[in-house]
Structures are given as C-alpha cells and as structure tokens.
Amino acid sequence: MNSLSPRTYRSAWRAAVAVIGLAVVTSCTSPSAPEDEGSADSTEGGSDSGSAAASGDISIAVITHGGDGDAFWSVAQNGAEQAGEDLGVEVNYTSDGDAAAQARLIDNAVAQGVSGMVVSMANPDALQGSIEAAVEAGIPVITINSGEAESIEFGALAHVGQSEEVAGEGAGERFTEEGATKLLCVIPEAGNIGLTQRCEGAASSFGDVTELQVDLNNPTDVQARIRGALQADPEIDGVLALNPQVATAAVSAAGEAGSEAQVATFDLSADVIAGIEAGDILFAVDQQQYLQGYLPVVMIKLFIENANTIGGGLPVLTGPGFVDESNAADVAEYAERGTR
Image 1 (tube, rainbow, N blue to C red):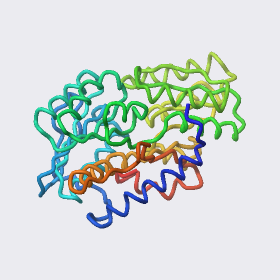
Image 2 (tube, rainbow, N blue to C red):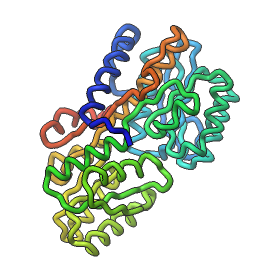
Image 3 (cartoon, rainbow, N blue to C red):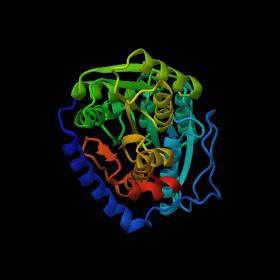
C-alpha cells in the first residue's frame, strides 16, 4: 500500500495539473460544456460513439470500461471530446464493460493505426496483451482511472487518475471523524480492481468494514441488498458507496430499513450534489473524471508533436478531493453541465 497521505497526494496532484495546465493554455481554450450536436453517448457494445471535430492528423482512441449511459464515464467522455475540439485532434470514444470485449476494441484501434490511445484498466490482466501490442506498434498509450500499478509495467507513458487505496483511506478517515463505528462498503462491479482497493483503503484507516457485492446493472437488487444488510446488522452506521448510482440507492435503502447510517460515496453526479446539499449524503470522494478524459489527450498531442512526457514514472493525480456541504454549491453547476 502506498504510504503517502491523502494530503500529500493532493499536493502532488496540484503540482502535476499545474504543469499540464501551462501547456493547455498555450494551445487551447478553457474547458466548456460540450455541445450536444456532433457527439453521441458511448455504446456498451463497443461501436464508435462519436468523434470530436478535428482539423489535424492526430487520431486518439479513448477506450474505457464504462457502460452505456454511465454517469461517471459520460463526464470523462465529455472531457476527452472537449480536448479534441480544443486541440484540433480527432477523438473516438468507445467503451465496453466486458474486459475481453474491451481488449478487442484496443486491438481494433491498433489495426486502424491510431496515433495514440487512452485506456482505463479495471481488469489489467485481461488487457495486458492488447496494451503491450499497442506499445509494440509504436502507439503511445496513457492509462486512466484504474490500473495505476500496472501502467508503467505494460509500457504506458503515464497514468492519470487517483490512488484508489489512498482515496479509500481518506474516506475511512472522514467516517471516523464523523463518529461512525461500523462501515458497509458496497462493491457494484465484480472484478474491478480499483473498487476493491477503495474498500481495502477504507478498512486500513477505519477498521471495521464489511464488504457487500451488488450488481450495478440491477438497481432494484442493489437497493434491496443494502436494505437487507442494514436490517441484518443494526450496528452498521456508515455506508460507503463506490459510485453515484449506488449512493442514491443507499440513501433510499437506509430510509426503508429505518437505519440512521450515514451515506457517503465515491464520484460526483448531479444527484449526488443534490443529496449532499439536502443532507442525505455526507460527502463524495471526487477524482475529477473530466480531467481523466481531457488531460491524456493533451499529453499525447504534446508527446507526438514535442516528445514531452509528464509524470516522471509517477501517476498524474486528479484526486482524491472531497465535496461536502461546505463546497457542494461551488461545483453544482458544473456537475449539471457534465464537466464534474
């Protein structure tokens, strides 16, 4: 486990983003909400979901494990496509939650001869061969979100995201400060290494953590399972959701169970912001997924055109940060427009 504290990571993140920001200012406009025209939602089956307007010869494939209509990944997609528009780079975003299908998307992008590639690695082992083949073909790869530990090993230029264990530690510390004594950590996606690391991090700083596996694709079952867990163990006084949809389900489940357990979550959405402002959600751990889409496009363009690299072998950190009642209003409008 990484020994750096969340505060140290946040300092490193600010420094890294500041370096990238200088490059962005010289070559693109400030980020704004993507226009509806000319873009499309990601498709779970992996077909092209639209490309940003481009005038140059650089083409970047962004291939993630986010499903169709996922609140988190739609923001990352917005970031990648906005970067493409700002920089005159062609950006093609595709996604598939099945690791084998995601690997095939990577193989297809290699066969198409893309200039660069951005990949999330929820299941690094399943993607290793495809990513290494892309690197062998001379395609610069930047990993995002999950798979920090394997990124450099697979040959990627850099990793952009947050340390999930450190973020989990921070969440556990916040629950401790709030006086919680027993925590339920809800894992909504089997096999996603980053989600497991979040619960492990929370356990390391909090102590008494019970994991609950649910299926994100079955919202009714998610709510029922959380309700059942709270009813079965009244000593649970904290629920850590690992994505926004689970957070809203957990709030409803706690009400149905007659539980006073406090709910917190990873990642932002408009619903999460509203829940924080209403007092239903304690806090959200924010990894700024818009930056995870936007920054790699900038980094690949700079590498191709100027041989620049960023990170020095360490991850470029976009989190963890915390959104709670003290600052929720500051980011609410950005969550509404799809950039936070």
